[in-house]
Length: 85
Image (cartoon, rainbow, N blue to C red; front, top):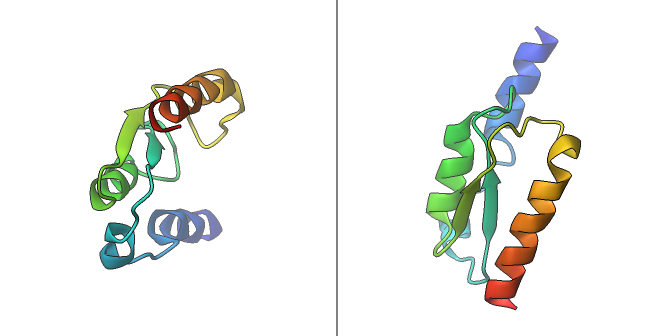
């Protein structure tokens, strides 16, 4: 039951309205995954779609434990920063 409640919380929090997300004017990179056991891919995708001009990058194999993907994450952030620096 605890795990079920945690998953529901992780899938719905933070509860930021589409209006607040639409007001973001800075460049945003959303690193998404289809392999997180707690946060469904749709949550990442919806977040990227609700922020104007946000870029979504799918990281295959990334789970809730991001440590094994730190190299890929760093590379994605560096490339994004180069484009928007």
